[in-house]
Structure formats: C-alpha cells, structure tokens
Image (cartoon, rainbow, N blue to C red; front, side, top):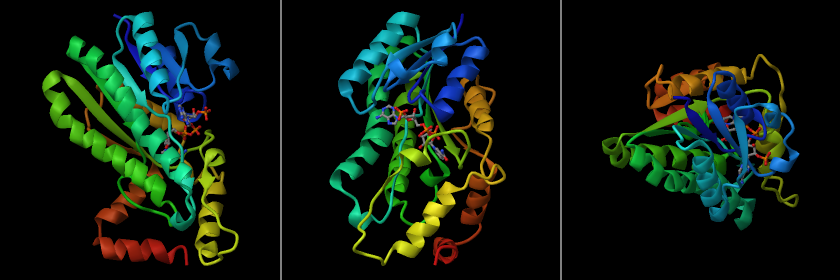
Length: 272
Ligand SMILES: NC(=O)c1ccc[n+]([C@@H]2O[C@H](COP(=O)([O-])OP(=O)(O)OC[C@H]3O[C@@H](n4cnc5c(N)ncnc54)[C@H](OP(=O)(O)O)[C@@H]3O)[C@@H](O)[C@H]2O)c1
C-alpha cells in the first residue's frame, strides 16, 4: 500500500525538498505550510496535497491533521520540520521573541504529536521524525542560546517520549543537521538587539558574519539530509539519533573528545 508522509514547514528549504523527494519515490505527501496560496511548485506534483498549517495555532494543527488523515486514510510518518531561529544577546530578547522561538520549535511539534497520537495508537504504528540540529546536542556559537534551548528541548522531548510510545508501536527519530544550503533559515532569524550597548558587538558581528556565508564548501548539500529522512522513514536506518553533515560531525567529534570546560573555552576562543 502507498505510504503517506506529513511534513510541517514545506514552503521552503528542507521541508520542500523532502516533500518533492518522497513524492518522486511514490509516497503520498501531506505538505503543510503557513501560506498555501503562495505555493506554485508543490501544487504541480500529483501525489502532493497541501494543507494550511501554522504550527503555533492549535486550531490549525487540529484541522490540518484531521484533513490529512481524511484525505489519505492513513499517515505513516510525520516530519516536524518547521523551525526558526532567534539570535543575539539574551539580555535584549523581547518576551515575544522568546515565546516565538519556543512556540515554533517546541510547542509546535508537541501539538502536532498530540494531534497524531490517537491515529498512530489506533494503527499501532507510526513514526515521528523531529528535525533538530547539531545545536540540539552541543553549543557552538555565542548569542545562540535561545535556538540552543529550543533544539535541546526538542531533543529532550523526543527522548523522553520514547518510553511511552515504544510499547504502542510508535517510533521516534531525531535528525541533527548542520548548516545547509538552499533554505531561508538565516533570512528569517530575529536578532535580539540594543544599539545603546556595545559590549556584545564583537561576538555578535562574528556570528552574523558566520551565518551570512554562502560558501558551498562550508555548507552541507541539503540532499544528504533528505536522503537521511528517507532512509529513516523506510527503515533502512534504524538509529534514534542521526547526525548529518560534515560540520556537525566535526563539532561533535571535538565535543566528545574533551571535557566540557575545555570545549567551551576552545569554542569561545574562536569568537573573541
Ligand atoms: N538551515 C540550517 O542551517 C539549519 C541547521 C540546523 C537545523 N535546521 C533546522 O531545519 C529545519 C528546516 O529549516 P530550513 O533550513 O529548511 O529553513 P527554512 O527554509 O527557513 O524553512 C523553515 C520552514 O519553517 C516554516 N515555519 C516558520 N514558522 C512557522 C510556523 N509558525 N508554522 C509553520 N511553519 C513555519 C517556514 O515557513 P514560512 O515560509 O511560512 O516562513 C519554512 O517552511 C528547521 O527546524 C531548522 O531549525 C536548519
């Protein structure tokens, strides 16, 4: 029987590529996005259906999940991909920015998971693939604490859920990607700022410059992440956590090779 995948944040970057890849491999795809009226590419693909979904809206989550189940009968895999980044000194973070970071990256996946659980329990099967980051398993840059918080939280949520979902036949996977090309991530970043204070300028400017690079040598090809998601969904890979890409793997090797105090000092030295 043809399998079906449900993807959040399919309007660009990894979500869109994943939707195209699964459709090309014969899957049905429920591609969800905040503004379906702007979509022109996925609408041309026969086995993709598009649903409106802002993951911060509990009503839209319930409606999109119900509509996708109704359209396809059964959903096999859910990819919690929608994600955003708040960067800049925590001292200047507005409450609405903190809420935005947490609501999109953590509460959104929670609500999508809650909405799918009755369906997965009934089927005694189903898989959640949560798109994390190497920033979910290690820190790497200054002024990224809110993004780190959100992805560490997503990791804890996913690992903690394992115990209650395993007995029900429901599987969980984490994909920890590094920086990749072909997405809108850096353009959507909200920067915490206070022009009256210059104390954080040196490190903030270094992080801004790091994030602005587009050198393909430094960024992973997003297809390797899509291939990993496909291998997880089709159970060719059965790992709970998969770290994808050269940059993340290099960082984790360094992180695991020394005590945390040495790692923090080493990383900090790159930004002073
Ligand atoms: N790019 C990187 O370097 C990188 C590195 C590690 C991890 N990641 C993670 O990879 C995932 C995909 O990001 P990407 O790189 O493909 O960046 P992207 O092109 O910016 O994609 C992010 C997607 O999330 C959607 N989104 C934002 N807020 C949303 C909301 N409230 N409800 C529903 N969808 C929302 C965006 O939709 P709109 O078009 O409506 O804004 C977009 O489709 C994210 O979880 C990100 O944290 C990215």
